Image 1 (cartoon, helix red, strand yellow):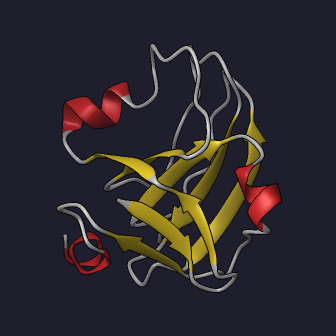
Image 2 (tube, rainbow, N blue to C red):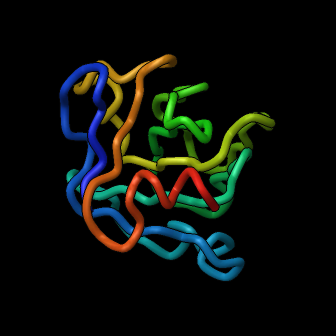
Length: 125
């Protein structure tokens, strides 16, 4: 599965995991020693995250049901809590530096390709 920034015509990740159950959302990236390109984690549904007990900073995208980025956070450090974005439908967690290298920002549109979660499925659930 891939995450594509349609606005900037760039690939954000090629190795994507979807956390769409309570247990998967709770676990998230906890316990991981590293998080590198081209990996990403989609947490669905989600409108706020934390980085408690994580070992590395991450980039975070809060995305609405139309796949528009409503917030982009670069380099969120461990032991932090994001604010709540009530219109967020899902969150994309990426390795730190991904947003800068891809110029991804608020207002960009994403596309999810491949796997059992197409962009359409992400918006319908």
